[in-house]
Length: 487
Image 1 (cartoon, rainbow, N blue to C red):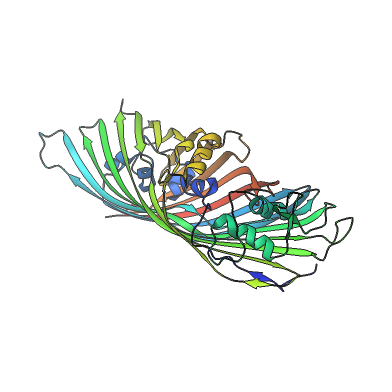
Image 2: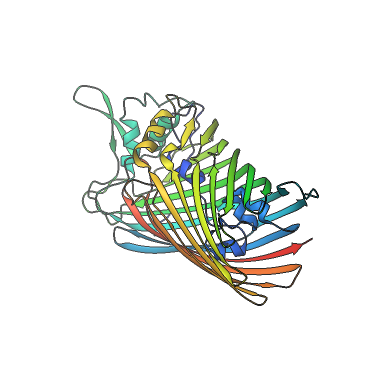
């Protein structure tokens, strides 16, 4: 395949018309199943159990279930396989990552007053990587009718874009149009009324060969400060104050050529369009929870997780290359913006079979249509309205079980997460299973877990014009190892 590197353009924009979209909000609104190996092995069904560091992220009342001072750390290896189908052509890409996924400590303070109903309180701190953002997706195929030129034309011929030629200060829409024009993907002309219009420079025969690759890296970390208390032997209450921090880089590269396109050929033979986003930010949220022992064996839990209020800074670079020459260069630095992700409610119940084992179920609800970019002014109102229109309220079910044989523990779990989109296709339902085991050495415990999850989605390469989706099947395999020290 020929490579064309003669033209390099990067757009400079001070005033941005629009860049943040639904996918940016969903990146931080959704979280993965992470945390300790015991938590993962039971698919995160810990809302009515507590006594595990990752259970604090479900129900902060679980801190009061701890009976001793503890420190736990967890290492995780994630293997992500993405299979893409684009107009009948199948491709696949793999990404492997290794990280310190969890680190926490908790201190238990018993009440020395035997007449008080408040038995103890606990103070803890726990870090978890709530979302490993390392990912790779590669798609290729022959598009029968739609070219990259339609993306640039949608901006260039939109009356709201305005004039974009001859200026060094362009907003986002103007930059997209300018990239297409300077890259000779679109041409300037006039209609019968003498008005300026833009037309495609690529052949009109269809059968455009296209490739799209996405490579991303980063994390979405959460540091929780937990305080919890136990009242008599029946009730547990807890509070989390959470600090969130994220760092994310995404690089996309789209390639199109016309070597297989029938009909009259133009001088334009191939185009490559690259985008690179760097985003970092921080945020705050809180959680409240309670656990009640209905009987010695049966427990119920209820928890609320507030929205997370983020503030982000982003830099954005775009380049386009073709075989026709020309050059321009620059970077977009967006003004800081805020994002509010939706809150979540979780109800839980668990049954403990003495020292033999247990079974636990969590049910969570989250309304993704409540995600909001801030301020909700004329800049962000269109994308906020779009999220209200296409996103939905979802349910998540997690089921976990554990059995104990002497020093050994054996665990398994299942989870289902409903699609956050009303169409159920843009991002589909998630199904996951997990299993693991642990060994109790006394003051030291060692746990291992394996978790599998599958989800289908539809990936649009661009937000307008060239919107034909690739069908993606994502399968993740996680192996975790935790070590716990009692103090």
